[in-house]
Length: 201
Ligand SMILES: Cc1cc2nc3c(=O)[nH]c(=O)nc-3n(C[C@H](O)[C@H](O)[C@H](O)COP(=O)(O)O)c2cc1C
Image (spheres, rainbow, N blue to C red):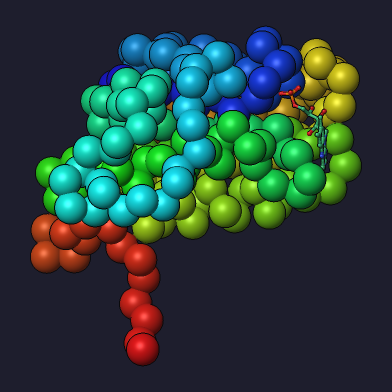
């Protein structure tokens, strides 16, 4: 299994990434290949809403988002890791999530990839980040695995929470095991582009 970790933290090697590395360690024990992708080190411009990708699948903004989309499409599972900034995910992460609208294509989507979450905050707002990232997984028809939500503030504080570190290791293992089950959405229910949910006008 290829497991991609998308770090939305601008702090390299801090709490979010320590937990993600622990999840990777768990996944590697079960044979996974892992790769950490640090969005804050990349050039990912926010979406300008031009809509060009709706027709062509190509985004006119040429930056590192094209590379990131290929990595997401090539992975069997994706761990999203974010610190909580003002009660939700970081701006760096949101830019990547929005730009991923360019893979709203029948042949380029995240259907059946396993999704896991790591969220770290110092006080409040963890669950808002958790539910928004799960909603992203749902509309992408991913297969949601567990989440780890941890309280830590200063870089490295997370290492004082061994239960969180152990939960992250378990998350990595769980993602490999879910991937090995080869669950798939029934083809007739696979969104042709993206599942925006059912709504009426
Ligand atoms: C701009 C900013 C906003 C923050 N907002 C929140 C918040 O709303 N809720 C919270 O629990 N922690 C908040 N924090 C604290 C971080 O989530 C916390 O320090 C976390 O450990 C950072 O993760 P990292 O170590 O992976 O960078 C904020 C930190 C910054 C820099």
